[in-house]
Length: 376
Ligand code: UD1
Image 1 (tube, protein in one colour):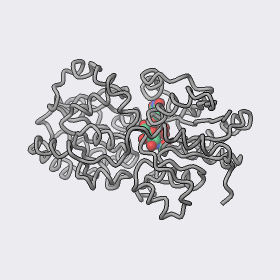
Image 2 (image 1 turned 135 degrees about the horizontal axis):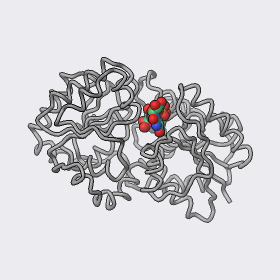
Image 3 (image 1 turned 30 degrees about the vertical axis):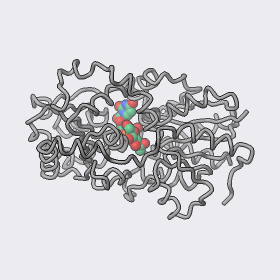
């Protein structure tokens, strides 16, 4: 029996891992333990996804909570080390690029337990992003690297990672989207918010570079205030809500009648909202891809992206947190709605065929007999 531990802790990691958790849990040759770090702890940031995606309860929750990057990462390492020493898994799987990802990878590597990185090879080439640090270091201490796209594979090869460690599986977030689409379609969120398809834009922002910087956050608020020709739905991350209050922008957003600022949403509600919106404005990595798959134009509120595939295909554009650029691009998209819609319908999908999680599990099982910590 192959013992696998999967370490997750933040909202997007639960979504990415869900199809793999289901497959591995049903496989008789595999014993899977899910370890939740507790990086996210609010109902809307974690539990709701376990419920919607029908995931088994984690073996343990390390309850690390919020803190500085060093505190959060170190707390996960200290608490996880004890669990891994006790459980003795043959492999530790870490999804994505959060502090829980790097903490999981480092702890396992130091115990000489092989690491498998789900969503390996993504690069924004911006080392100021905590996620860029996390994913690069995770890739370099992993034994199995599962890449979502050819570009991610190339990034790893450029960094000298051995070809035989890399498996281009496709994107597990795409698997999740395909599997959950029928349920997402049934979400009553449009009626609940009084929205009509294509008559609203969806905004999310939570990156430190935007929400911890008063100028950037103010520019984004200014842009959505000006975009009053349509409704803006704004599910605000807890960190964003806190920062809006701190920079005295909260009531400025609330008093705009065309802006609906609401609490963070579940997965099905989010997917339904993305699919039916005229455009998505976001600084999230995952939502850039979800908008692409759901054929909704995306405006990314950053200067770089780890998903250049979507930009190259013309489905996404980078505008930073610049009011003029946001408003200009959004207006352009709204003016050319139909033309853009047709273009998005016909794009190739570089993110695989929706079977990435099965390919991951197959690769893990075929490597199982020789699965040892690589010393090079
Ligand atoms: C983390 C990930 C990011 C991912 C995001 C998804 C890192 C470095 N970042 O960012 O890649 O896109 O998750 O949401 O790991 N908070 C709550 N309740 C919660 C969780 C957080 O109120 O359940 C608030 C706290 O004020 C906390 C802040 O949000 O300090 C930031 O949380 P944190 O886990 O540090 O990072 P995220 O911004 O969520």
